Length: 220
Image (cartoon, rainbow, N blue to C red; front, side, top):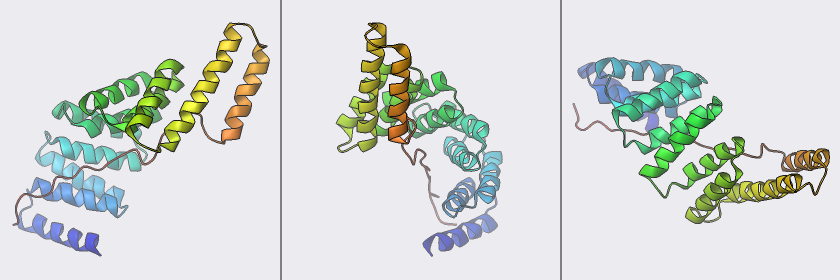
């Protein structure tokens, strides 16, 4: 297959020039695509030893760590990528998603806001930002984020569903505040609503992570 041929080509590059950083990065990328994440980790770490200041390699290693469920290491590498390249939109996006998985919600929110600052038409980042704001019980902000996601991406079902849920939840909570309904009754309604969805109310759209690739600039 094409990936296997690419893998062989990269091995040749390494043999002829073992200090070719982009070859190790490219190899790590291909191994990701082949679901060989332990081998991908080895290759990407080799690239980092050759150049610790390579933002894209740290990004790709973050993705590999995420697939290996080593989320703290994933977050650390995504964070390093943003420090090395403050304009790396996808690194902020992936960092936000990883921090959300780690339940570091305030940090996750900040990371998605930075991704959106760099790319203001990033529908998926608005969507995931809404999920995080919902978990933080900032329902007005969540509503705004979902609406922006829907405006940017036609037919965005996940965002539309979560917006509907958020609006219903806001209405029910408002009744509690106005004492129009018994608190226990409202909790039962919220639980029933969640059960009907059969999903966490603030689900994260998948796939959430992207692999960024810098191809070798010349043949060896």
